[in-house]
Length: 95
Image 1 (cartoon, one colour):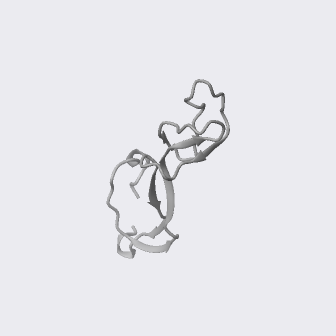
Image 2: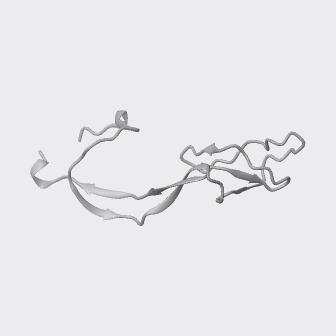
C-alpha cells in the first residue's frame, strides 16, 4: 500500500500472490538505426518508453530525418525482456 512513484527506478521488494501474467516480450532498450537514404549507421539511441528514432542522419551530406531501419545486427542494439504481472495482496496483510 505504500508503493509510490518515488520508488520508480529503484529495486523494491513486495509480497503477494501473482494472479495474472503476460507473455515475455522483447523491449528495445538502445537502438542503432541505419539511414534508408545513405546507409550510415546512427549513434546508439536510448529509448524513452516509446520507439525513438534519431532526429537526423549523422552523415553531413545526407538530409534524412524520417527514413530509418533498426539495425538488429549491431552489437550496440540492446533488447531486454518485458513482462506484466498482476499481484494481489496476501489475505493476512489486508487491514
